[in-house]
Length: 105
Image 1: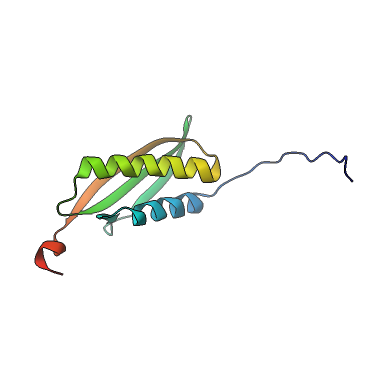
Image 2: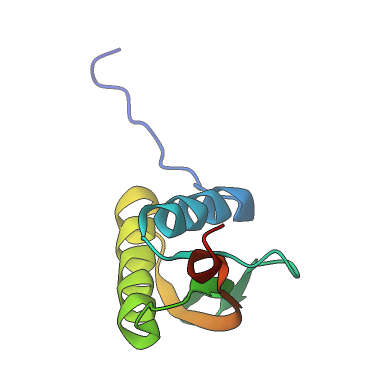
């Protein structure tokens, strides 16, 4: 069968796989975590690719714009690299502040 032609089929990457990639990226960035208050990751389809919405908790002292931009870049790059999917937007809502580090907890 050396001359057989293999037809390309469809490849679908489930929302759960994308969520797992996002969770991994968030876990690798110091000073942030996914929000515990509501569903923290939402993936939707758009005309330009996938849109990802995240809710985060940040530790007191974290420079929010800097960390969020890093997160957005890493999410887009990692998902594109690992799945080939185009990410049109990574929207982030910082919905809580962790001050436990100030209190020694």
